[in-house]
Image (cartoon, rainbow, N blue to C red; front, side, top):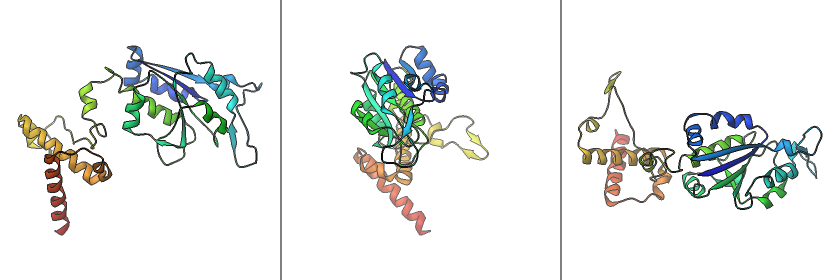
Length: 247
C-alpha cells in the first residue's frame, strides 16, 4: 500500500478525483490511502492568511514556508516519506518517474500557489516535479496527475497485463484498438483482428504501435529497445510514408 499525503489550500479540488473511479476503488480496497491536508489550518495568522509580500519586491504574493512546514511535520512518519513539491522548475514527470515513485510506500506532495513558495521550503523536500513546460494557477492539478499515474501502478489496482501494454510503459505509443460493432459508418475493424490468428495479430499490433510512434512521437523511438523485427517493420513504415509523399 502507498500512502499519499497532499498539502493543499484547496482540498475540494482533489476530492472529486479521490472519490471517483479507479482511485476511489483503490482507496476502498486498501491498496492506497490518501490524506488531504489544508495547510491554511496551520497558519498562525488570525485570518488564516498563508501568503505575504516578497522581500525585494516583485509582483504577486508568496506562500510562507511556516504553515507548510508545520503541516509537514504534523504528518506521522514524514521524515522517511518521499516529499515532493510541484513547480515549473522541477524535473519533468513521465511514466518512468511514475514507476520510480511507485516504489515508495509513503509520498507527500506539496501544492504551491500564487507566485510561488518561499525558497526555504526546498530544504524540507526530496523531489521537485513539473508536469510540463507551462504555468498553472496552482499545484493541485499536478498533484492529481502524480496521484493518478502512481496509484494505478500499485499491484492489483488495475490488471497487470493492461499496464504492460500501455503507451510509454512499453516505450512506444499503444497500438489502435477496436470493439463492436465490426463496422460503423463504413469504418471496419481491420480483418486481421477478427481472424483469430494470434501471431498475425501480434505482428499487426506491434507494427501499428511502431507506426503510431513514428508518426506522432518519433522522439520515443530513440530510447525504445527495438528488436530486429521492429527495425524491419520501421524501415517498411518509413518506406510507406516516403511512397505516399511522392504521390
